Length: 148
Length: 148
Length: 77
Length: 77
Image (cartoon, rainbow over the protein chains, first blue to last red):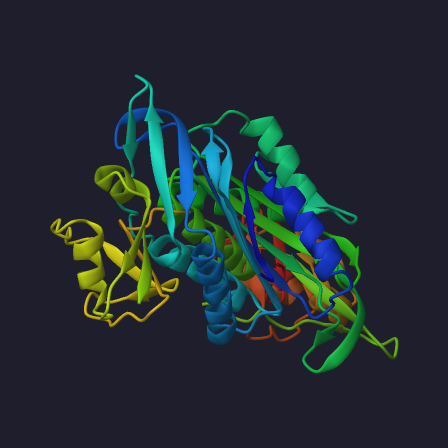
């Protein structure tokens, strides 16, 4: 789906942005504002050392809901382009997990759309994290915390 | 000054972020959230075609105030790192002008600090834009618009 | 009619099942599909449901050929 | 005492001066430094002032060796 990518393996968010802009936004001189968020894996959650994580998703539904979130952002804000990239599969501490980006003529729309994409994704997109702890045990993350 | 760069010439914000993270944040596994803003030059302002821009600054005062804005962000938000990069000199449409970035454990701090950096910079940092119009005429930009 | 019922993440592991094919003469609702696919297990309060990959309420009717999914609160991003 | 008075951007162009060195026996204020460095021009309402690279009010006193600067609203970013 346009503007949505799921990646099963490490990715460099800055290289993704370079590539996306070169392919889709080169010469776009109406563009004044780009807001970007990158979420990455911490080695600590709820006080426990975490050594790895597995990201499960619902193939089909996940892509569909990420595309719907992009559409909703395009309806709420005046955007030139928007992008969501999300990891699936096995993830290690410091790895980027998610990238959201919004391109607009003006900074208010870019900032707010980028944050909207993240909050909508966190609350609605079907992904589930299972953590591997330092002692080898595993546990599912139970819920996301609100971001506002 | 730490975390502040003025650049007289084009720069690639994504390459700056790659470099900054490699130099200062490699292996930082407490980092969960990176929020970034890039402002770039539009070819239209107040209804007129703009072909180039010159960014004047106050050497010394500009760097000092950008560093103070970074310090204020570090006081208001819980941050791991923060960065401001700003162009000076001659700028062409589509060129990036400014990059602000905030790194934190959590997304709320990163988002809000990144936006704070931009709004503080727009309202306080001594920079002045002079536009070159399509007919060769020049004019100073009179004021920045609010971003909230 | 037939329904596919799928489970994800901790729910899949807890129930020990990934997908169940149901066949029946009447269609029923999302919560009836849950009851039949789990052999009558109680539905945890925080379970989310989807019909054909759209979020659905427990009393939403299901139709022949639908894919019904159950999963815990989402934790992406 | 001596003061350096600097002008930036549109103000520099309008006044036709970049920097003025003032020497005098008393120190005075920011607005007095403006008056002397501009030969008594009226100060536009939106002019910003700095003393030693910190923002300053028009009635702020200045001291020997200070750098006083005047400029229009900032338009960076």
